[in-house]
Length: 115
Length: 113
Image (tube, rainbow over all chains, first blue to last red; front, side, top):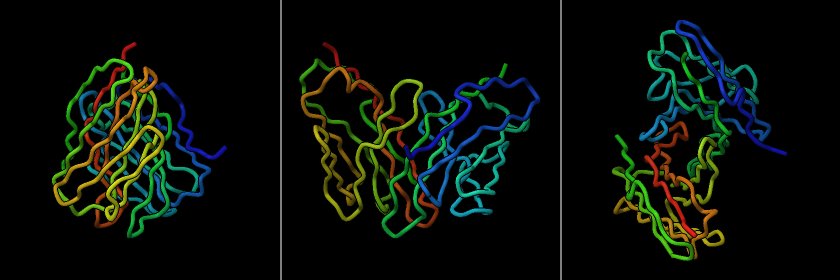
């Protein structure tokens, strides 16, 4: 079945640790995205990538890093520089930007909690 | 800067009622608008995608309309069922690169027996 797989579903981080969230897709999509969701707020874009080996900062990139070495994978690292990392993280993918814009598909999310 | 607002924030209706969820956006320069459903603790499921040149899209009991000039979209749910209970999010896709979405904060719907 085609889709987007995020792992783990739950993740606990100690203060000062870096943690990496996994996102894999088998939809043959060019573009991938990371969003953060907090209670009472809309989803906010952290990073996005249109093609392999290229990515751009979104609206709230500080304290996060990404890589895009393979088309299928777009891991997100939450670094110790992120002051308030507790949130629900969602990965999405779509075909590459076109004049019409493409439908985005989302994974099931990773809930990160700082302990 | 694009801002997306959804009203109401929460809605509770009896089963069988027809209902309308509202979404407004401040910048009409969009490629399209997408409606999503989110169940508690889950990811987003795409419901409908309306291109900027379209006025509406339908899927089963769902109908979404778009009035780009006034910056409004509505999601109409016919004959609501308890299984429709979820949070509904709208998102607009910006022009200017990146295929990026700007989301509203959602409407939390509860359909009661």
